[in-house]
Length: 113
Image (cartoon, rainbow, N blue to C red):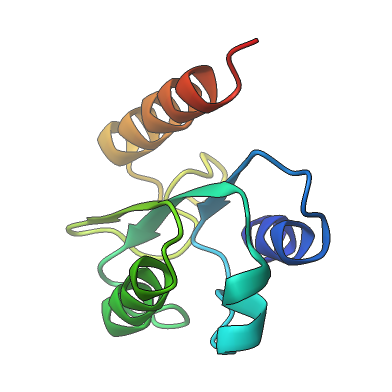
């Protein structure tokens, strides 16, 4: 839910500089995508049944076509909530560590003073 809310904030707050989406719902409406001014980082699981890779690629394509900044990664052999250590069957430490590092790096570059 947090990733989807992050994108909703990006749609409705033009001053937002960056947002991260970790397997969250993505907008499909071109009007909403056009409103996004923030750089968007996305981390997704290749085996996520709720947010499949095709949806991620479609969002990435729509963002790029609209001239927006997007950096999306789809992790092999991962499903939804792969960063949550309480997700006993779905947690993937390597992917979670990489996703966290990508987020810190992205925010570090985008949010420099």
